[in-house]
Amino acid sequence: MKLVVAGVAALAMLTLSHAASAAPPDAITLMASTCVGCHGADGTSRGPATPTIAGMAPETFVEAMVSFKDGTRTATIMDRIAKGFTEEEIKQLADYYGKLPFGRAPQKTDPAMVAKGKDLHNEFCKKCHVDNGKKDEDGSNVLAGQWLPYLHMAMEDFTVHGRKTEKKMKAALEEVAKKDPGGFEALMQFYASQK
Image (cartoon, rainbow, N blue to C red; front, side, top):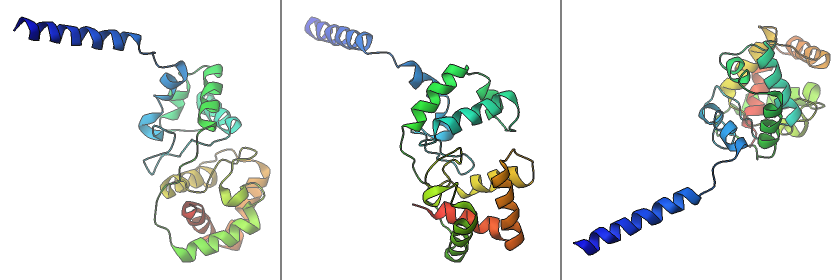
């Protein structure tokens, strides 16, 4: 019996010493852990109302967080979360997520709407949303493969709730609406269909 107790004690000491020598998580991992519940462990959203932030250009990430923090961009929860970070921490998170690969959401789309959306994209959107929306250049964010419900909410923010847009985006949205009353839905179907 004494031999068993000694063995258990030795194993416990070995386990404790290993745990004590394990490196603590770094600061960026701890900061990013606040994003996991909504945006996924790797920045790839698991929920249809939340965007994937992996692969987002750091400038786009910083601009979004700053606008949530200062209240110029409306949000349900991000405004409160953003206020908890300093400017330097926001930049660190932007770099962290910018280096991660974008994971596209698996979802069903309507092939006819996708085809119509592709034509509208090529006519009105491809200059900013390059590579069919797969790249974030000049603050355009990655649209290809985002969840369709998230794309709907974002489009409603721009077209109904007055979310700030650049002149060229505002003009493009107006042109799409003039050309095709169902054009926004077709565009979102097209972006959501991208693999």
